[in-house]
Structures are given as structure tokens and as C-alpha cells.
Length: 219
Image (tube, rainbow, N blue to C red; front, side, top):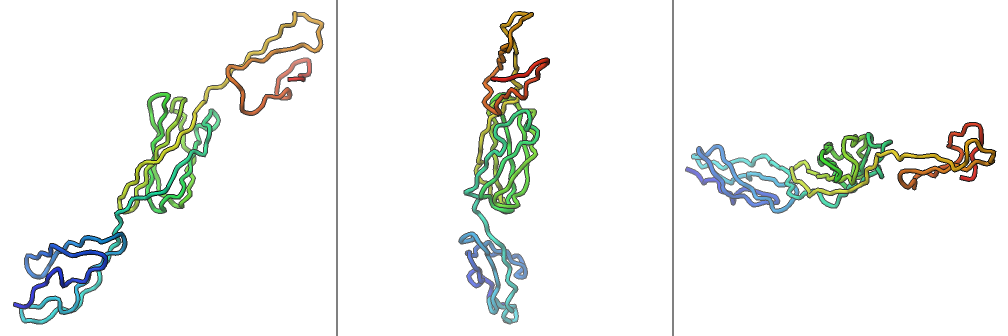
């Protein structure tokens, strides 16, 4: 019988070979522990073992695989729809930044205003990627929390990153009244307009009011 194959005779790049086993001296298995992320390769060099006739083996092919034990890191997520309102709640969106291209993402959106969630998933095609067209109409008004995870192709999952946004879809009410007598000979006639909440978005102008038999001014 010739010299037996040993783990120490194998040529390993970026790793350590151990636990070489065989049942028939033909087919062997060996465990290689990677030293770091990156290519890990194994080769049987010439003259590593001998047959029963004491003939040395020829060199094998080189087998290689990439080791990746590091989860994605350094990325972030932010709402691009802010605030969420009655006009955009069926097409909300967010953006990824510094994400690992090729990683799979999954997200969950919840509201502190009540039960329910919206979920979705996809693959990162660019480091800074927009995700749009998310329907959050079914979630109650309140603070929406977006929680997103990335999992790289090797299966390493990163801790969730998150962002929040306010959702307010209630349409403000408006009441119009006047203290003028009816009928009145006053001109101009002063009307008051009272909203159910502060109108701090687009400003109200006299030009958008619906007036019959008159002209609005001095709003």
C-alpha cells in the first residue's frame, strides 16, 4: 500500500483543512475552515498520495468558492412620502441608501394608531434605490414605522433599519358664517371661515372661494 492522503498534503488557500475521511480510499471528504471572507480554494497537488502500486497521484483541478460571513452594514432607509395624506397614501414610497447591491430586502410598515401592517420585498439593484407605489391606505392614521432588513446572497442578515412618518388622512372641515343681518344693505359683507384644524399647508386665497353674486377680497 502506498502513502495515504492527509489533510496536511492538500493545498488550501484562505483556510485550513481538517477532518479528512474516506471509506474506500477513493472518495474523500475534507472540512475547510475559512480564514477570512473571500475566495477559498482546495487542490490536491501532485505526489500527495500513492496508489497500492506506489504510483503518485497527478495534480487535481482547483475547486474554489467565495466565503462571505459578513452581514450588510452602513445602509439606511428614509420615507420619501412625507407626510402621508389622503392624496398620496395609495402610492407612498421610501429610499434605500448605501445598500449592498444584490441583497434581498424585506420591509414591514405599521401604525401606532392601530393594528395592521403592510409588507413587501425585493432585490437591491442599486446602492441608492427608490421603492414606490406602496399602498398604506389600510393602516390607521398615526405615526407609521418602516422597518427594513437586508439579507445578502450568502444568507447574512443585517439588523433592521427604520424610519417614521406621520399619516393624517382626515379631511379638515370648514364652516362659513356671517354676523350680517339678512337682508342687509352692508357692502362689503364680512364672512368668517373656521376650519376644524390649523391649515398650515397650502395657503387659502380669496381666489379659490366660491362666491355667488359678489367678489371676495381681503382674506
